[in-house]
Structure formats: structure tokens, C-alpha cells
Length: 304
Image (cartoon, rainbow, N blue to C red; front, side):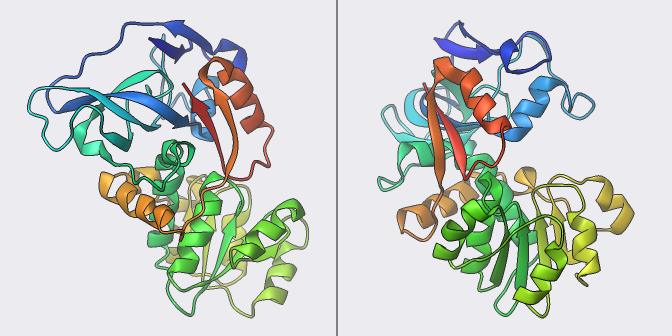
């Protein structure tokens, strides 16, 4: 089969699509023929070596967590899924950017027919992260929630989940994304110099903030009077020790049950997962180059 591999840390040029043996599912595992697999900023940081101290790579390394596809085989002891079943899932083995991947059966859920393949393949990392972040800040009716990076992969889902929880949501994003945010019931506010004043003009009080960008957004939340326990960052881990804020992300939301809940919302038309672009597996370098240019609305997806 074809799979993405890199043999050293570096830019997108270290990514290659190579022939490797098709894996065999072991006990409690299924083999999935991948129909779509999202890409994520964290994968690029792992590949570059920027996260070596937290998530070191073992070379040659595969990559990818998100996946959706068709069950092609199952290992001993697997029940509930059979060959031909369409599923959404994830792997922690950096392996989904490939034509086939072995997945723990507990990490897959059926794909609803009304969830497109590209959306299904992009749902895990961004969806689980957004789900965990909204849960961490305990968004509820009557709250005003600010989401920094509101049009990105995580942010675009988080703003909608916070709205579904009943909160009024302010989305910080570039002006090119303001129409999309407004169409989804979000109050758009431009980021950059003067953002605190623009937020105060949009809402007299801010109750919670989700930071998907890093930088000074935790401090911005504190300056706006948000209590530390109602601030969640998926980037600024130093702020956890410094200010007592939360840092709940994909690990906190990682479960097939969460995936099933998100997929059901998509199927019901209650959650929109924007797909910025799709690329064939052979163009994985182009896909990550597009991601790393920034200002992507929603997700970029590989189609093996």
C-alpha cells in the first residue's frame, strides 16, 4: 500500500509517499481502507521537530490521526463491525495518512450516510478538541463566550458547539471569515490591535474564552475579567501553570462516543464542518504547504 513517511525532521520536503506492507489487524483491531484523512497543525509541528520534547518521532515515521473509511478486515475477538462497514475513527499510532490503517475497534463508530467522506475523515482531532474545550469552559445559556481563531479547524467547530450549548459567541477572525461566522449565528470580531475594545463593544461582559491560537489570548481573557477556570487554551500550556487556566484538547475528547455525537450533529444539519481543500495522498506536501500558509477556514483533507 501507499503511505506517508518521513525519515528526519524538517519542512514539507521530508514527506514522501512510499510503498509499505499492508498491516494486519491483531486482536481487538480492524483494518480500514482509508477514504479520507484530515491533516492538522500538530502533525506539522511533530514533523518539523518543534514538539520533539513532548512528542518525539521514531524514524521512519508515519503520520495522521483522523480517518474515515471502509472496514477491510478484522482481527480476533472483534464484534460489532464487519468487512464493508463504513466507519469514522482515529489512531494514536501516526498512521492514517495511508491507503490502509489498523485501528483499535473501540476507536471507530459507524459513518452516518449524510456525513460526507471528507467531513468524516476530518472530524476527530478538530472535533474532539473543540468538544473538550467547550465542555471545559462549561458553556451554557446566558454566557458570552469568545473563541480565538474562530474560523480554523478547531475554532469553526467550537463556535458552533458553544452556540448549541446556548451561549452567545464572539468569534475572533479575519474579515474574510466574518460572513461565514455571522451565517452561523456568531458575532464576528476582527483580531489584532484594539481587539479588547472591539470585544467590549460587542458584549458588556465576557464569561469564558477558548484560545486556539496562543500568543496573548489567555492574558486578554484575564484582562476582560474572565475567571481562570473558564479559560481553555489548546496552545499556551505555560499559562496553565502561570494562571491556573485549563488546557483540555483532543486527548480529553478522544472517544468513539464523542465522534458519534459529532457525526450525528453533522448528519442532522446542526454542525457544519467546513472543508477548505482536498488533496490526493500523492500531494501531501502541497496539502501541508497550504495548511502552513495559515488563514484556512476549516479543514484540509487527504483522499488516498
